[in-house]
Length: 465
Image (cartoon, rainbow, N blue to C red; front, side, top):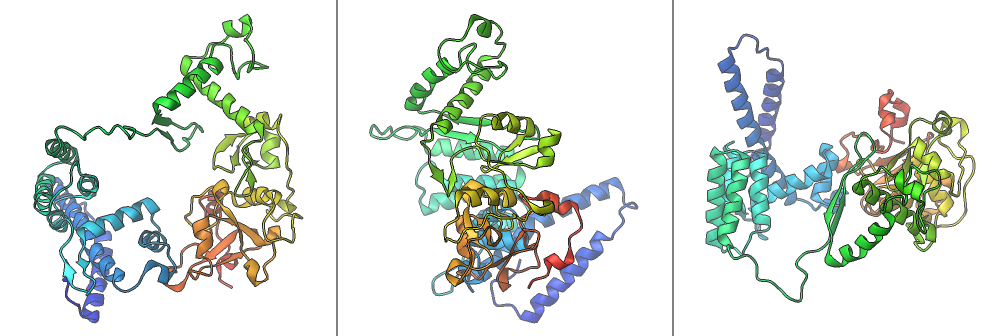
Protein backbone atom coordinates (compact mmCIF):
# COMPACT_ATOMS: atom_id res chain seq x y z
CA UNK A 1 0.00 0.00 0.00
CA UNK A 2 1.31 3.49 -0.89
CA UNK A 3 2.21 5.56 2.13
CA UNK A 4 0.28 8.70 2.94
CA UNK A 5 3.52 10.69 3.07
CA UNK A 6 4.62 12.65 0.03
CA UNK A 7 6.49 10.23 -2.24
CA UNK A 8 9.45 11.15 -4.35
CA UNK A 9 8.25 11.67 -7.93
CA UNK A 10 11.01 9.59 -9.51
CA UNK A 11 10.47 6.75 -7.03
CA UNK A 12 6.75 6.58 -7.78
CA UNK A 13 7.17 6.65 -11.56
CA UNK A 14 9.99 4.10 -11.44
CA UNK A 15 7.86 1.76 -9.33
CA UNK A 16 5.02 1.97 -11.86
CA UNK A 17 7.44 1.33 -14.72
CA UNK A 18 8.58 -1.81 -12.92
CA UNK A 19 4.97 -2.83 -12.32
CA UNK A 20 4.14 -2.43 -16.04
CA UNK A 21 7.17 -4.53 -16.94
CA UNK A 22 6.16 -7.26 -14.48
CA UNK A 23 2.59 -7.30 -15.82
CA UNK A 24 3.91 -7.70 -19.37
CA UNK A 25 6.18 -10.52 -18.20
CA UNK A 26 3.30 -12.30 -16.45
CA UNK A 27 1.11 -12.02 -19.54
CA UNK A 28 3.78 -13.78 -21.61
CA UNK A 29 4.27 -16.73 -19.25
CA UNK A 30 3.41 -20.30 -20.22
CA UNK A 31 1.77 -22.34 -17.46
CA UNK A 32 1.86 -25.79 -19.07
CA UNK A 33 4.77 -26.97 -16.92
CA UNK A 34 2.98 -26.38 -13.59
CA UNK A 35 1.07 -29.02 -11.70
CA UNK A 36 -2.64 -28.67 -10.96
CA UNK A 37 -2.07 -27.77 -7.25
CA UNK A 38 0.42 -25.10 -8.33
CA UNK A 39 -2.03 -23.68 -10.88
CA UNK A 40 -4.80 -23.52 -8.29
CA UNK A 41 -2.43 -21.82 -5.86
CA UNK A 42 -1.53 -19.24 -8.50
CA UNK A 43 -5.22 -18.63 -9.14
CA UNK A 44 -5.73 -17.87 -5.44
CA UNK A 45 -2.73 -15.55 -5.44
CA UNK A 46 -4.11 -13.73 -8.50
CA UNK A 47 -7.43 -13.27 -6.72
CA UNK A 48 -5.70 -11.78 -3.68
CA UNK A 49 -3.71 -9.43 -5.89
CA UNK A 50 -6.87 -8.29 -7.67
CA UNK A 51 -8.59 -7.69 -4.33
CA UNK A 52 -5.68 -5.53 -3.14
CA UNK A 53 -5.46 -3.41 -6.29
CA UNK A 54 -8.36 -1.01 -5.51
CA UNK A 55 -6.54 0.14 -2.36
CA UNK A 56 -3.92 1.78 -4.58
CA UNK A 57 -6.69 3.33 -6.68
CA UNK A 58 -8.23 4.80 -3.53
CA UNK A 59 -4.97 6.52 -2.61
CA UNK A 60 -4.45 7.89 -6.13
CA UNK A 61 -8.03 9.19 -6.33
CA UNK A 62 -7.81 10.77 -2.88
CA UNK A 63 -4.69 12.69 -3.95
CA UNK A 64 -6.34 13.78 -7.23
CA UNK A 65 -9.31 15.15 -5.29
CA UNK A 66 -7.01 17.38 -3.22
CA UNK A 67 -5.64 19.04 -6.37
CA UNK A 68 -8.64 20.03 -8.46
CA UNK A 69 -12.42 19.89 -8.83
CA UNK A 70 -14.11 17.84 -11.58
CA UNK A 71 -15.43 21.01 -13.25
CA UNK A 72 -11.94 22.45 -13.57
CA UNK A 73 -10.89 19.61 -15.89
CA UNK A 74 -14.15 19.50 -17.86
CA UNK A 75 -16.08 16.77 -16.04
CA UNK A 76 -19.49 16.90 -14.41
CA UNK A 77 -18.42 14.87 -11.39
CA UNK A 78 -15.64 12.58 -10.19
CA UNK A 79 -17.60 9.61 -11.51
CA UNK A 80 -17.86 11.33 -14.89
CA UNK A 81 -14.09 11.87 -14.87
CA UNK A 82 -13.43 8.17 -14.26
CA UNK A 83 -15.98 7.08 -16.87
CA UNK A 84 -14.36 9.26 -19.53
CA UNK A 85 -10.71 8.54 -18.79
CA UNK A 86 -11.03 4.83 -18.02
CA UNK A 87 -13.84 4.08 -20.51
CA UNK A 88 -15.99 2.42 -17.86
CA UNK A 89 -19.74 2.69 -17.33
CA UNK A 90 -21.20 5.46 -15.20
CA UNK A 91 -22.56 2.80 -12.85
CA UNK A 92 -19.11 1.30 -12.33
CA UNK A 93 -17.54 4.75 -11.97
CA UNK A 94 -20.03 5.70 -9.26
CA UNK A 95 -19.35 2.42 -7.48
CA UNK A 96 -15.62 3.08 -7.45
CA UNK A 97 -16.09 6.63 -6.19
CA UNK A 98 -18.37 5.41 -3.40
CA UNK A 99 -15.92 2.68 -2.42
CA UNK A 100 -13.00 5.11 -2.40
CA UNK A 101 -15.01 7.50 -0.23
CA UNK A 102 -15.53 4.81 2.41
CA UNK A 103 -12.30 2.80 2.18
CA UNK A 104 -9.79 5.37 0.95
CA UNK A 105 -7.78 7.95 2.92
CA UNK A 106 -9.44 11.29 3.66
CA UNK A 107 -8.21 14.79 4.34
CA UNK A 108 -9.43 17.59 6.58
CA UNK A 109 -9.99 21.14 5.41
CA UNK A 110 -6.45 21.93 6.54
CA UNK A 111 -5.00 19.02 4.57
CA UNK A 112 -4.43 16.54 7.41
CA UNK A 113 -4.94 12.86 6.57
CA UNK A 114 -7.76 10.92 8.25
CA UNK A 115 -8.51 7.21 8.55
CA UNK A 116 -11.12 5.69 6.19
CA UNK A 117 -14.81 5.81 7.09
CA UNK A 118 -14.76 2.00 7.40
CA UNK A 119 -11.23 1.26 8.64
CA UNK A 120 -11.72 -2.46 9.29
CA UNK A 121 -13.24 -3.05 5.86
CA UNK A 122 -10.49 -0.95 4.27
CA UNK A 123 -7.80 -3.02 6.02
CA UNK A 124 -9.41 -6.27 4.87
CA UNK A 125 -9.60 -4.93 1.31
CA UNK A 126 -5.94 -3.87 1.42
CA UNK A 127 -4.93 -7.32 2.68
CA UNK A 128 -6.82 -9.00 -0.17
CA UNK A 129 -9.13 -10.83 2.21
CA UNK A 130 -12.41 -9.50 0.76
CA UNK A 131 -13.62 -8.72 -2.74
CA UNK A 132 -15.92 -6.20 -4.40
CA UNK A 133 -19.05 -8.23 -3.63
CA UNK A 134 -18.22 -8.19 0.09
CA UNK A 135 -17.60 -4.44 -0.03
CA UNK A 136 -20.92 -3.83 -1.81
CA UNK A 137 -22.86 -5.67 0.91
CA UNK A 138 -21.10 -3.75 3.69
CA UNK A 139 -21.65 -0.48 1.84
CA UNK A 140 -25.36 -1.23 1.47
CA UNK A 141 -25.69 -1.87 5.19
CA UNK A 142 -24.08 1.41 6.22
CA UNK A 143 -25.79 3.40 3.45
CA UNK A 144 -29.14 2.80 5.13
CA UNK A 145 -28.70 1.36 8.64
CA UNK A 146 -31.83 0.19 10.46
CA UNK A 147 -31.23 2.73 13.26
CA UNK A 148 -28.93 5.68 13.81
CA UNK A 149 -25.49 4.35 14.77
CA UNK A 150 -23.20 6.01 17.29
CA UNK A 151 -19.46 6.02 16.62
CA UNK A 152 -18.71 3.01 18.84
CA UNK A 153 -21.48 0.85 17.34
CA UNK A 154 -20.48 1.93 13.84
CA UNK A 155 -16.89 0.83 14.41
CA UNK A 156 -17.93 -2.47 16.03
CA UNK A 157 -20.23 -3.43 13.15
CA UNK A 158 -17.54 -2.47 10.64
CA UNK A 159 -15.09 -4.75 12.44
CA UNK A 160 -17.63 -7.59 12.69
CA UNK A 161 -18.67 -7.46 9.04
CA UNK A 162 -15.06 -7.22 7.86
CA UNK A 163 -14.11 -10.23 10.00
CA UNK A 164 -17.08 -12.27 8.72
CA UNK A 165 -16.37 -11.29 5.11
CA UNK A 166 -12.71 -12.30 5.40
CA UNK A 167 -13.61 -15.95 5.95
CA UNK A 168 -16.95 -16.39 4.25
CA UNK A 169 -18.76 -15.97 0.93
CA UNK A 170 -20.78 -12.87 0.02
CA UNK A 171 -23.98 -14.88 0.44
CA UNK A 172 -23.14 -15.66 4.08
CA UNK A 173 -22.06 -12.07 4.70
CA UNK A 174 -25.40 -10.85 3.36
CA UNK A 175 -27.26 -13.13 5.74
CA UNK A 176 -25.17 -11.91 8.67
CA UNK A 177 -25.69 -8.26 7.73
CA UNK A 178 -29.43 -8.87 7.59
CA UNK A 179 -29.33 -10.53 10.99
CA UNK A 180 -27.43 -7.60 12.51
CA UNK A 181 -30.00 -5.20 11.03
CA UNK A 182 -32.81 -7.23 12.62
CA UNK A 183 -31.13 -7.31 16.03
CA UNK A 184 -30.63 -3.55 15.96
CA UNK A 185 -34.29 -2.91 15.21
CA UNK A 186 -36.35 -5.94 16.19
CA UNK A 187 -39.59 -4.01 16.62
CA UNK A 188 -39.32 -2.29 13.26
CA UNK A 189 -40.07 1.35 12.55
CA UNK A 190 -42.95 3.02 14.33
CA UNK A 191 -45.99 3.52 12.09
CA UNK A 192 -46.68 7.08 11.00
CA UNK A 193 -50.33 7.88 10.37
CA UNK A 194 -49.79 10.99 8.27
CA UNK A 195 -47.34 9.37 5.83
CA UNK A 196 -47.97 6.54 3.37
CA UNK A 197 -46.26 3.29 4.28
CA UNK A 198 -44.90 2.82 0.78
CA UNK A 199 -44.77 4.53 -2.56
CA UNK A 200 -45.82 3.01 -5.83
CA UNK A 201 -43.09 1.95 -8.24
CA UNK A 202 -43.01 0.74 -11.83
CA UNK A 203 -39.79 -0.54 -13.38
CA UNK A 204 -39.45 -1.35 -17.07
CA UNK A 205 -36.35 -3.40 -17.79
CA UNK A 206 -34.12 -3.22 -20.87
CA UNK A 207 -35.13 -4.89 -24.10
CA UNK A 208 -34.08 -8.50 -24.55
CA UNK A 209 -32.88 -10.07 -27.77
CA UNK A 210 -36.47 -10.81 -28.83
CA UNK A 211 -37.53 -7.20 -28.20
CA UNK A 212 -39.60 -7.89 -25.08
CA UNK A 213 -39.02 -6.17 -21.73
CA UNK A 214 -39.77 -7.25 -18.19
CA UNK A 215 -41.92 -5.02 -16.01
CA UNK A 216 -42.18 -5.13 -12.23
CA UNK A 217 -43.29 -2.88 -9.42
CA UNK A 218 -46.00 -2.27 -6.87
CA UNK A 219 -49.16 -0.18 -6.81
CA UNK A 220 -50.43 2.14 -4.15
CA UNK A 221 -54.05 1.52 -3.07
CA UNK A 222 -55.17 4.48 -5.18
CA UNK A 223 -53.31 3.24 -8.26
CA UNK A 224 -54.77 -0.25 -7.86
CA UNK A 225 -58.27 1.12 -7.39
CA UNK A 226 -57.81 3.14 -10.59
CA UNK A 227 -56.20 0.48 -12.74
CA UNK A 228 -58.18 -2.65 -11.87
CA UNK A 229 -61.59 -1.52 -13.21
CA UNK A 230 -59.95 -0.29 -16.44
CA UNK A 231 -58.21 -3.62 -16.93
CA UNK A 232 -61.40 -5.49 -16.15
CA UNK A 233 -63.02 -3.57 -19.00
CA UNK A 234 -60.29 -3.46 -21.66
CA UNK A 235 -58.85 -6.81 -20.56
CA UNK A 236 -62.12 -8.72 -20.78
CA UNK A 237 -62.35 -11.69 -23.21
CA UNK A 238 -62.81 -10.44 -26.75
CA UNK A 239 -61.65 -6.88 -26.01
CA UNK A 240 -58.57 -5.24 -27.59
CA UNK A 241 -57.46 -8.53 -29.16
CA UNK A 242 -54.61 -7.85 -31.64
CA UNK A 243 -55.39 -11.17 -33.36
CA UNK A 244 -58.74 -9.80 -34.56
CA UNK A 245 -58.87 -7.97 -37.89
CA UNK A 246 -60.84 -5.18 -36.25
CA UNK A 247 -60.26 -5.37 -32.47
CA UNK A 248 -63.15 -4.31 -30.30
CA UNK A 249 -62.19 -1.29 -28.15
CA UNK A 250 -65.64 0.13 -27.39
CA UNK A 251 -68.99 -1.38 -26.56
CA UNK A 252 -69.44 -5.10 -26.10
CA UNK A 253 -67.41 -7.63 -28.11
CA UNK A 254 -69.31 -10.11 -30.24
CA UNK A 255 -69.89 -13.67 -29.11
CA UNK A 256 -67.57 -14.82 -31.90
CA UNK A 257 -64.77 -12.52 -30.67
CA UNK A 258 -65.19 -13.81 -27.13
CA UNK A 259 -65.25 -17.45 -28.18
CA UNK A 260 -62.14 -17.14 -30.35
CA UNK A 261 -60.11 -15.30 -27.70
CA UNK A 262 -57.45 -17.76 -26.52
CA UNK A 263 -55.35 -15.25 -24.56
CA UNK A 264 -54.54 -15.74 -20.88
CA UNK A 265 -55.71 -13.12 -18.35
CA UNK A 266 -52.14 -11.79 -18.16
CA UNK A 267 -51.97 -11.44 -21.95
CA UNK A 268 -55.32 -9.63 -21.98
CA UNK A 269 -54.02 -7.19 -19.34
CA UNK A 270 -50.99 -6.49 -21.52
CA UNK A 271 -53.14 -5.77 -24.58
CA UNK A 272 -55.43 -3.61 -22.44
CA UNK A 273 -52.47 -1.44 -21.41
CA UNK A 274 -51.47 -1.04 -25.06
CA UNK A 275 -55.01 0.05 -25.94
CA UNK A 276 -55.06 2.52 -23.06
CA UNK A 277 -51.74 3.98 -24.20
CA UNK A 278 -52.95 4.38 -27.77
CA UNK A 279 -56.04 6.18 -26.55
CA UNK A 280 -53.98 8.65 -24.53
CA UNK A 281 -51.52 9.26 -27.39
CA UNK A 282 -54.37 9.76 -29.86
CA UNK A 283 -56.06 12.32 -27.60
CA UNK A 284 -53.48 14.96 -28.49
CA UNK A 285 -53.51 16.25 -24.92
CA UNK A 286 -49.89 15.32 -24.13
CA UNK A 287 -48.39 18.17 -26.15
CA UNK A 288 -44.62 18.22 -26.68
CA UNK A 289 -41.56 17.14 -24.71
CA UNK A 290 -38.17 18.66 -25.53
CA UNK A 291 -39.60 19.95 -28.81
CA UNK A 292 -40.98 16.62 -30.00
CA UNK A 293 -44.65 15.63 -30.00
CA UNK A 294 -45.41 13.01 -27.34
CA UNK A 295 -46.10 10.24 -29.77
CA UNK A 296 -44.47 7.15 -31.26
CA UNK A 297 -41.81 8.56 -33.57
CA UNK A 298 -39.91 5.81 -35.40
CA UNK A 299 -36.75 5.99 -37.50
CA UNK A 300 -36.09 3.30 -40.12
CA UNK A 301 -34.78 2.96 -43.69
CA UNK A 302 -36.42 2.42 -47.03
CA UNK A 303 -34.48 -0.83 -47.45
CA UNK A 304 -35.95 -2.24 -44.23
CA UNK A 305 -39.44 -1.13 -45.18
CA UNK A 306 -39.20 -2.74 -48.61
CA UNK A 307 -37.66 -5.97 -47.33
CA UNK A 308 -39.93 -6.03 -44.25
CA UNK A 309 -36.97 -7.09 -42.10
CA UNK A 310 -34.96 -5.31 -39.42
CA UNK A 311 -36.10 -2.84 -36.81
CA UNK A 312 -37.06 0.79 -36.31
CA UNK A 313 -35.88 2.95 -33.39
CA UNK A 314 -38.28 5.16 -31.42
CA UNK A 315 -37.30 8.43 -29.74
CA UNK A 316 -37.55 6.68 -26.37
CA UNK A 317 -34.86 4.19 -27.42
CA UNK A 318 -37.18 1.25 -28.11
CA UNK A 319 -36.47 -1.06 -31.04
CA UNK A 320 -39.62 -2.09 -32.92
CA UNK A 321 -39.73 -5.01 -35.38
CA UNK A 322 -40.36 -3.68 -38.87
CA UNK A 323 -43.68 -5.53 -38.99
CA UNK A 324 -44.89 -3.51 -35.99
CA UNK A 325 -43.62 -0.31 -37.60
CA UNK A 326 -45.65 -0.97 -40.75
CA UNK A 327 -48.74 -1.89 -38.74
CA UNK A 328 -48.48 1.24 -36.59
CA UNK A 329 -47.81 3.38 -39.64
CA UNK A 330 -51.07 2.27 -41.24
CA UNK A 331 -52.99 4.67 -39.01
CA UNK A 332 -50.42 7.39 -38.30
CA UNK A 333 -49.25 10.71 -39.72
CA UNK A 334 -46.10 10.18 -41.76
CA UNK A 335 -43.02 12.38 -41.90
CA UNK A 336 -40.58 11.54 -44.71
CA UNK A 337 -36.92 12.59 -44.72
CA UNK A 338 -34.82 11.89 -47.81
CA UNK A 339 -31.02 11.53 -47.59
CA UNK A 340 -28.50 11.84 -50.41
CA UNK A 341 -26.91 8.51 -51.38
CA UNK A 342 -27.56 7.08 -47.88
CA UNK A 343 -24.84 9.38 -46.45
CA UNK A 344 -27.25 10.66 -43.80
CA UNK A 345 -26.89 14.27 -44.93
CA UNK A 346 -30.33 15.90 -45.25
CA UNK A 347 -30.94 17.56 -48.62
CA UNK A 348 -33.04 20.30 -47.04
CA UNK A 349 -34.68 21.08 -43.70
CA UNK A 350 -32.88 24.19 -42.46
CA UNK A 351 -34.67 27.10 -40.70
CA UNK A 352 -33.10 30.37 -39.63
CA UNK A 353 -34.21 30.59 -36.00
CA UNK A 354 -32.61 29.72 -32.65
CA UNK A 355 -35.01 26.97 -31.52
CA UNK A 356 -35.21 23.85 -33.64
CA UNK A 357 -38.56 22.90 -35.09
CA UNK A 358 -40.29 19.57 -34.46
CA UNK A 359 -39.45 18.64 -38.04
CA UNK A 360 -35.75 19.23 -37.43
CA UNK A 361 -35.88 17.18 -34.24
CA UNK A 362 -37.40 14.26 -36.13
CA UNK A 363 -34.55 14.41 -38.63
CA UNK A 364 -31.98 14.60 -35.82
CA UNK A 365 -33.55 11.57 -34.17
CA UNK A 366 -33.22 9.66 -37.43
CA UNK A 367 -29.55 10.66 -37.73
CA UNK A 368 -28.28 10.79 -34.12
CA UNK A 369 -30.82 8.46 -32.41
CA UNK A 370 -29.91 9.91 -29.00
CA UNK A 371 -27.37 12.10 -27.23
CA UNK A 372 -24.21 12.29 -29.34
CA UNK A 373 -21.66 12.62 -26.51
CA UNK A 374 -19.54 9.43 -26.31
CA UNK A 375 -20.84 7.04 -23.68
CA UNK A 376 -24.14 8.86 -23.07
CA UNK A 377 -27.27 6.68 -23.20
CA UNK A 378 -29.91 9.44 -23.10
CA UNK A 379 -32.60 8.82 -25.72
CA UNK A 380 -33.85 11.36 -28.24
CA UNK A 381 -36.87 12.32 -26.19
CA UNK A 382 -34.61 13.25 -23.25
CA UNK A 383 -32.16 15.26 -25.38
CA UNK A 384 -31.98 18.88 -26.47
CA UNK A 385 -30.93 20.32 -29.81
CA UNK A 386 -27.32 21.53 -29.66
CA UNK A 387 -25.63 23.92 -32.10
CA UNK A 388 -22.71 21.61 -32.82
CA UNK A 389 -20.74 23.64 -35.37
CA UNK A 390 -20.93 26.99 -33.58
CA UNK A 391 -23.02 28.21 -30.67
CA UNK A 392 -25.98 30.37 -31.66
CA UNK A 393 -24.59 33.30 -29.66
CA UNK A 394 -21.36 33.01 -31.67
CA UNK A 395 -23.09 33.18 -35.04
CA UNK A 396 -24.14 29.55 -35.30
CA UNK A 397 -26.97 28.64 -37.66
CA UNK A 398 -30.04 26.61 -36.82
CA UNK A 399 -29.66 24.59 -39.99
CA UNK A 400 -30.15 20.86 -39.86
CA UNK A 401 -26.54 20.28 -40.97
CA UNK A 402 -25.26 22.35 -38.03
CA UNK A 403 -27.33 20.74 -35.26
CA UNK A 404 -27.01 17.66 -33.07
CA UNK A 405 -28.79 16.00 -30.15
CA UNK A 406 -27.27 16.38 -26.68
CA UNK A 407 -28.75 15.69 -23.26
CA UNK A 408 -28.98 18.74 -20.94
CA UNK A 409 -25.90 17.75 -18.91
CA UNK A 410 -23.80 17.16 -22.01
CA UNK A 411 -25.03 20.37 -23.60
CA UNK A 412 -23.70 22.36 -20.65
CA UNK A 413 -20.25 20.80 -21.00
CA UNK A 414 -19.59 22.65 -24.25
CA UNK A 415 -17.77 25.94 -23.78
CA UNK A 416 -18.43 26.13 -20.01
CA UNK A 417 -16.36 22.98 -19.32
CA UNK A 418 -13.95 23.21 -22.24
CA UNK A 419 -15.55 20.64 -24.55
CA UNK A 420 -15.86 21.27 -28.30
CA UNK A 421 -18.08 19.65 -30.92
CA UNK A 422 -17.95 19.36 -34.67
CA UNK A 423 -19.93 17.55 -37.37
CA UNK A 424 -18.10 15.31 -39.81
CA UNK A 425 -18.93 15.07 -43.49
CA UNK A 426 -20.90 11.87 -42.88
CA UNK A 427 -23.11 13.56 -40.29
CA UNK A 428 -21.54 11.96 -37.21
CA UNK A 429 -20.93 14.35 -34.31
CA UNK A 430 -17.52 14.42 -32.60
CA UNK A 431 -16.97 15.59 -29.03
CA UNK A 432 -13.44 16.82 -28.33
CA UNK A 433 -12.69 16.72 -24.59
CA UNK A 434 -10.55 19.21 -22.64
CA UNK A 435 -6.85 18.25 -22.37
CA UNK A 436 -6.96 16.57 -18.94
CA UNK A 437 -9.80 14.28 -20.00
CA UNK A 438 -8.33 13.49 -23.42
CA UNK A 439 -6.83 10.00 -23.48
CA UNK A 440 -7.16 9.53 -27.22
CA UNK A 441 -10.60 7.98 -26.82
CA UNK A 442 -13.14 7.80 -29.63
CA UNK A 443 -14.89 11.10 -30.32
CA UNK A 444 -18.26 9.72 -31.43
CA UNK A 445 -21.04 7.95 -29.54
CA UNK A 446 -21.22 4.40 -30.87
CA UNK A 447 -23.90 3.48 -28.33
CA UNK A 448 -26.53 4.53 -30.87
CA UNK A 449 -24.50 3.46 -33.93
CA UNK A 450 -22.79 0.16 -33.10
CA UNK A 451 -22.70 -0.67 -36.80
CA UNK A 452 -20.01 2.01 -37.22
CA UNK A 453 -17.61 -0.28 -35.36
CA UNK A 454 -18.18 -3.14 -37.79
CA UNK A 455 -16.02 -1.49 -40.46
CA UNK A 456 -12.45 -0.08 -40.34
CA UNK A 457 -12.22 3.51 -39.12
CA UNK A 458 -11.41 6.27 -41.60
CA UNK A 459 -8.23 7.88 -40.27
CA UNK A 460 -9.05 11.23 -41.82
CA UNK A 461 -12.32 11.36 -39.90
CA UNK A 462 -10.64 10.78 -36.57
CA UNK A 463 -8.04 13.54 -36.84
CA UNK A 464 -8.85 16.73 -34.93
CA UNK A 465 -9.19 19.96 -36.91
